[in-house]
Image 1 (spheres, rainbow over the protein chains, first blue to last red):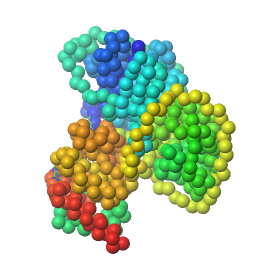
Image 2 (image 1 turned 90 degrees about the vertical axis):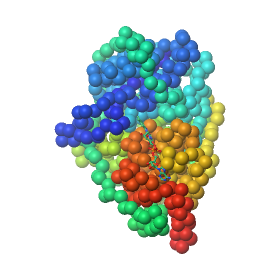
Image 3 (image 1 turned 90 degrees about the horizontal axis):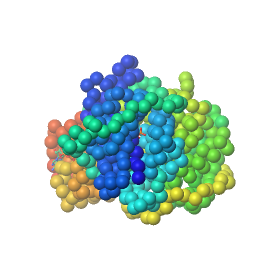
Length: 247
Length: 321
Ligand SMILES: Cc1cc2nc3c(=O)[nH]c(=O)nc-3n(C[C@H](O)[C@H](O)[C@H](O)COP(=O)(O)OP(=O)(O)OC[C@H]3O[C@@H](n4cnc5c(N)ncnc54)[C@H](O)[C@@H]3O)c2cc1C
Ligand SMILES: Nc1ncnc2c1ncn2[C@@H]1O[C@H](COP(=O)(O)O)[C@@H](O)[C@H]1O
């Protein structure tokens, strides 16, 4: 049983969002990089739990990123992956990234591929569905629970106004979110072990780039809060009704 | 050449987010002087012809109950086929749960560039550039789509629906549907509740409410406003509220017309999920709470006193109009 977990790197959730080069590039100065929380907290931990239950499970990690991604992938190995592959490219295009992962997935013969729900920087929610299409596998998005018995996965996923439970026979691509697992902190043993786990760097295969970022903008600043006295809530109601037209 | 809009339905009803997608797609078509058409999968009880008033002339339907559950693989195959049959060059989805499962998959199948989470009409003056939210609403990016066919998924609640005149014709699409590899065994809809991502108004509570037993005041306010309810992450983590109510960077992202935050400090990760709301009201007893910096209106006060008064004042206002 082979699981491929997709790991992406994102700025820390408290990072200052600023742009350089005439607003064409994200300003990476002083940015702390983290594993995208959906990848770290949910999909990776769920894969580790499956391995803890069944020693025959092996977990491979994949990231498409440049050398800046190495600490991130090492941390993921410290949490519990067996080996990692880094595709050496800094692309932002979903199709390019998904093609890289799918090509490795097709070679590796994985039973299960986990992605996060979305990256918290570019918020694409695209890579999982694309990998599924490019590997001709079923795709379950926005999973909140994942159980596996033999080769049948039972997955709960978020749908509009509720949830849906479904059985799917592997192979399968799943995008994970809150509920699938609980965040873990790497321990010292894991960190030591990660140093010697294999991390293979490969060059990207040929793939088209179908989109490119032209520029960034910051939202206009808020005008400032209008405070209403706590003993005058009817004034707030008036403002929301007449001025903001929100109720 | 045309714009094809995916019309998302659940339980036979067209979703509000789809009406936004239709209006948006029809506006793109107008901008380019081409036709706008829709595609709907599964059995629908709503009158589809009435969707013509949002600007589409024709709706392709695969009226097959095997498609009443979303299977991204089947959907992608059918939609891609419809794109080829209709000669559509631009494909529009809503970036809702279904869109997140299907849009990118269709894009990969058609080798089309995608912008997901779009928030404005494309700029077609020089290429095809779409604005989208990035960094969980903290910024926008303008993305150029380079492929011949283009896929856009539109953020819910970011485009105004406009109903005009018009009747759409319905064309049955004769496409064979392969058996699904996904066997749905249960559907649990939270009955009576308004889906968080589609709600016009969201009332949200944080750790300031002290415990689940105190949620009554918030639920009363939500009921009075016809609002959906949400919460901060620690509240979800502590199981005071169901985890699907957790909003923020690592939870649900919402963009209602009105977001009322009660006893929430306004941490940057929380704001990342709510900062696309049009109007933000903050009720917090600490005047220094960071949330006030992101708010439009605020009350510095004790939620246990302010919220019931607010509910009563809204009731009174409604009775007088
Ligand atoms: C990587 C990462 C991701 C995260 N993702 C999210 C996320 O998606 N969503 C999220 O919400 N958080 C997220 N967090 C957590 C976030 O940093 C904050 O810890 C959290 O939002 C705080 O929740 P809170 O405002 O409910 O609680 P607190 O910060 O404890 O704030 C409680 C507030 O209630 C006020 N209060 C107390 N009593 C009253 C009263 N009687 N009346 C009125 N006001 C009162 C207090 O003044 C205070 O401002 C994340 C953190 C990290 C590190
Ligand atoms: N560069 C990347 N390398 C590996 N996995 C990625 C990469 N980008 C995105 N992913 C995976 O795809 C998920 C969704 O990303 P996105 O579609 O970009 O929002 C992430 O949570 C990751 O699991």
